Image (cartoon, rainbow, N blue to C red; front, side):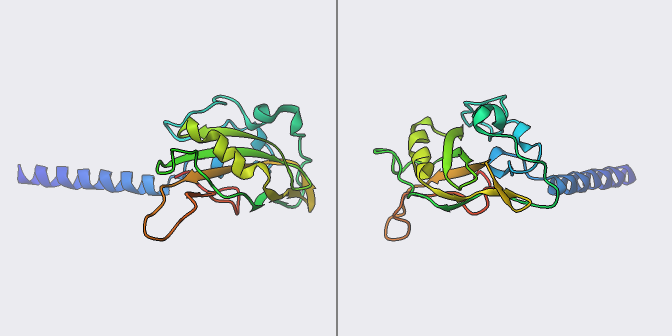
Amino acid sequence: MPKFRFLLAAATAGLAAVAAAAQSQSPAPRWSSNTDYSTPGARDLPVTCRRGDLQPFEGKTMAQVFGDAWPAAPEMTASHTPPKVVSSAKVIPPRGLEGKPATVVVAVLVGADGKPLASEAVCISDNAFTIAAKRVLRNASFEPATIDGKPVTSVLAVPISFRPVRRGGGDSGGGSGGDSGSGGGSQE
């Protein structure tokens, strides 16, 4: 009986190690906020959000969200760069909700000239923050996506995070603009 217990314990430990290794090697979930929509075929990927988020475009692709306003990009032959946020407005939570955390992923259609053409909130942790999140990017400036060195119209999904203000110094802005450098980023 002791030999059987030893073998059972060894088998259980081995299965646990295999499961842990598989989990550590699995890629991060592909959410809309960490998808490069300037790559070929990405416009036809479905909008994906964290579990529990409100998803106004559930089951739709980013191409369906923006329709004809987003022209198909030319096929890439050598290289591409995704669009990036260069500057944006300060993150200001809605009045009365200053201490409540929330994240809204705003998809922005960025023109080849770097100007925002349209925006949609695609993943929303709290609907009360949608307008404030879109306001952050309304007059933002962007570096457009490029394909083979030529600027193209593309979509950038930007997570806008609203965080409680820390008392006694620190952050006085009520939040941060998420990952505005790469357009990738992650949802928290």
